[in-house]
Length: 326
Image (cartoon, rainbow, N blue to C red; front, side, top):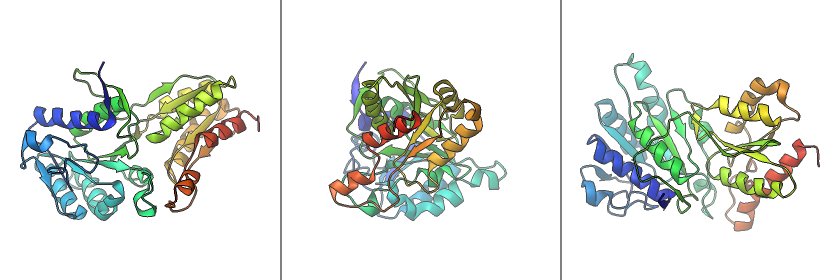
């Protein structure tokens, strides 16, 4: 099976869907001649021309609105934000238009649009460019929210998102683009709303998404050296959330640690904790633990940036608390 990077997997997904459906096009800042800020759209302009790979001004509200209108009349736009921090400029189009037009039109208009781009902390880009907004978008009915952690998931889920008749917020881990993994050469898709067990275990369930999946996998290796087998569950899609997969795992292990790079207050992990409590109350052998970033804007200094975000040691410590070892 070919081994390719996360960014190449996304590129393949868009290329294949644009070849499959002439209604698919991509629009955003520097997506064409510059090949994308993270080179995710590399080569697409040469393959599909400026008619379907559209470079835009720095005007997120404007080109997000164009995308919503295009989706309403039958096209399938992919709107790239250079970073999801910039999606805040377009949030009215995403939340008040894309998410609501189907319901407000009585089903007369579908909005098959994908808003995609890098999300979460990068490296030393400070407070305004290192934020995680999945809880913002997962809060909104009418949107689907996807956060793949691997190249395999990224390709399969992006293809499904492009084909979906509903608006999808597709958030790519900003530090995952260079990570490689096996991706089939043949056609495949992954269903939205279905999670995946990234590592089987028996003593504790670690629930994480995007980059935190890899932090949990590294923590699981550390724990295994002490005889503690952690199961790592990746929901992949936050809305709809595969609650059944998470609950089944926690019922098996009796313990749950939720790990997210977002802030603690009203973070998405709180919703996961609620669902685990509802589905597993009689099976829990310890209180649910959450590991989050600190409740502060992201510092610029590298040592402080690392200190703010969840690290392997933080996950290990949380697991040990559930086992009453600390």
